[in-house]
Each structure stands twice: as C-alpha cells, then as structure tokens.
Amino acid sequence: MRDGLDNLVRSVGYRTKHFVSAPAFLDSGQYNDPGCLLLDVRLPGMSGLEFQELLAERGVRMPIVFMTGHGDIPMTVRTMKAGAVDFLTKPFREQDMLDALESALKKDRKIRAELDQIADARNRYDSLTSREQEVLRLVVQGQMNKQIAFELGLSEITVKIHRGNAIRKMGTTSIPQLVRAVESLGASESTAGSHPQV
Image (tube, rainbow, N blue to C red; front, side):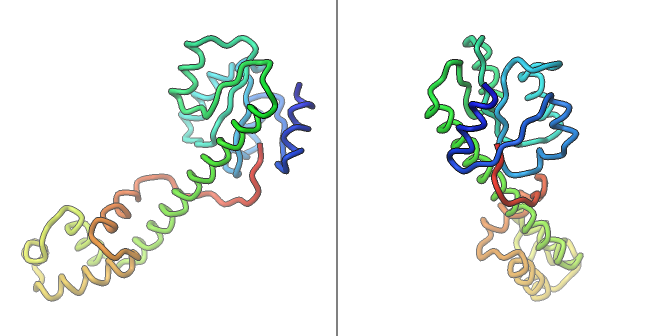
C-alpha cells in the first residue's frame, strides 16, 4: 500500500517522505516544511486521530488527509471537525487520493501565504518608533487625532505625523487595512520552505 501510494504521488511530481511512527515525524522537524500529511487512522503507537490532536496542541498547521479501511461516520466527522482536509475509505480511487492531496497542498499554500503576511506585518510593526506604536494602538482602538493628542499629551499635528508615518511603514492605505494588519500580529510567524512534500 505504501509503495503504491508513493508511486502514485510521485507520478504527479510531488516528493514524498515516509515515517515509521508519529514520534519519528515529530522528531524530524519536517512539520514546518511545505506539504501535507497522509495519515492512516491506525498507526503504530498512537492512532492517527490522537496524532491529529497532538499536532493541534503543538500548533502544527500542516493539512492532513486521512485514510482508513475501518472508518465510520463519527470518526469521519471527528477528523473533519478537527481540520482534516479529507477522509478516504479504502479502497479508494487513485484520482480521489490525488484530488484530496491537491486540496491539502492548496490549503498549505494558503496557510503559508497568511503566515508570510503576518510575518511581514510583524516586521513592519517592529520598525515603528515607540511613539508611532502608541499612536497606532490608539488609532486601531478607533480614537480620533484630537483624543490621541489629549491622551498622549501631544499636539494634534504631531499625532497626524506619527499616524501618517505608522500607516506608511505598515504598508497600508486605509484604516481598515491598518486594523487588519495590527490584529494579525498575534498569530504565528511564517516558516520558510520551497517544494511541497506529501
């Protein structure tokens, strides 16, 4: 089964990597690489479902495609609610597997793009002076220039200058964009990588 899947996935141009167990995958550190996981529900040691929960607890966002020969509706629902991209019951059609993997890799690209945007916003925010950060925090809270000036003990023109600098440095052109960029800063930063792996 493993060799057949390996040949199938490689036939469409993807690299594959096999792991003998869930801990072996975690020890490899490859959960930060671009790609997705193809997991059997029945793994040696912990189950695929338990492994999915462990990955979530550790903040690993790599998309998962499950396969099993012993699936039921509650199990399928559980994995999908926990974020699995697909749940395939053996025997499955090769095209169904390829479609599921393509969906998972598409999801991975989207996650990585979002994380890259967050990292960019973090770098831009870190480039602000402490005064620009103070002004920005109050702008995002919806305060007007006059209110910010009063709260910080500055002139309104000084607030406008700091606000303009903050908006420019954050790479935004509107207050709604600015708010979204600042709100994104609590998320994890991007990890680097190049070629998708399954």
